[in-house]
Image (cartoon, rainbow, N blue to C red; front, side, top):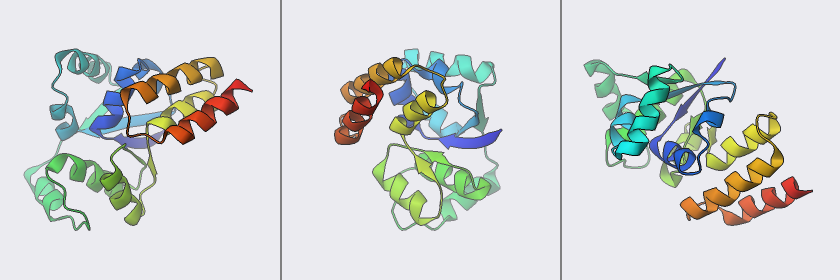
Length: 166
């Protein structure tokens, strides 16, 4: 099974549209870092994530002191405020696996490092393309995504919705 590492905002989007169980049906080992989990502070979101951690659906990567130093020393063009984004970037770069993010700065940095990057829209299209959900459910999830995340490219979402309606 192929690894994929996700950042915090992907979890927020997928939880908000009610698609977390479907997300874990993708043919990936879904990984994140301990720093991402620490950012999930709303109790209802945290509880949902904890269920999937206990069920071993999410592999939470912890770091040694030496690795944390490596993360801080990891050269990036962009300046990241905290360690969370840099930790998922460093790990996906180290493991040569895709990164899921909705953060434009992180996406650009990852692409510059040669890391394959996808976002929340990709999650839904992957569910549809792999026949894990019906197109009609994909449409509902895409419409919900527009409601919960105004920073997404609505034109791309609308184009997918039109394709799924055919």
